[in-house]
Image (cartoon, rainbow over all chains, first blue to last red; front, side):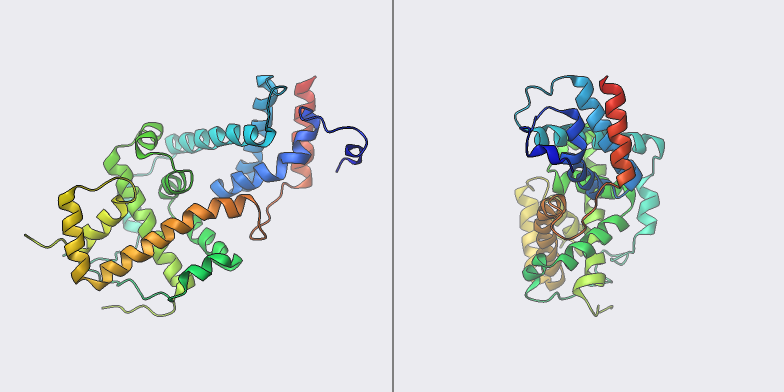
Length: 197
Length: 88
């Protein structure tokens, strides 16, 4: 964008250049976790504003890490706010999900065999698109805990505290998210045919 | 010893990714897995996706050709504008 970068040494601390240099990266970061363009844009803006207001930008060794750190907090705040505004009971979600077990707890939709070379699949862009599609399809709350736990690797204790839910509740949400994601990828990516009993 | 149901085992497979199971639970799961091909398969696939999930963010954040989301030009300008206004 700015051609004068060639002549003038890049000033790490110039807020005017932040958007050009980090905007897209931060936006992608937010999109991956929120899947909502408007919210992602807003949070990127909020991140820059918070950085500006903090007035500490002269001493930041690594701008990018610093912005990502701020954005992370904004995302968690957003999750919490949304959670408070639109609380959903886990029971409601339970009904939406396909039941893979019969009343005795045995598989009624058996896990299908996946191709042996499943690990090669991680190298293909299409797989990650399918992954994202399945992730986006999870109920909101399930998706949120899964993202925070599996990808950001927040400890379960930290998550319970941040989201104000019990360990049992968190376990159920994570379980359902994992089961749902596995099943979705099975249908949309790995398979093919499922044997139903 | 009553054998655990597949549902219980699958739940514990998930829990084992978040905390260490008790010895008793681990034993029960192990015994079940030895006899139940479906749960063994479920476990293998769940662990696979657990590992995949860890890679997902890195790949997405780098925008490695998967979904190269970018801020729209309008958003760029809007954010710049607000930074300018507040920076004065």
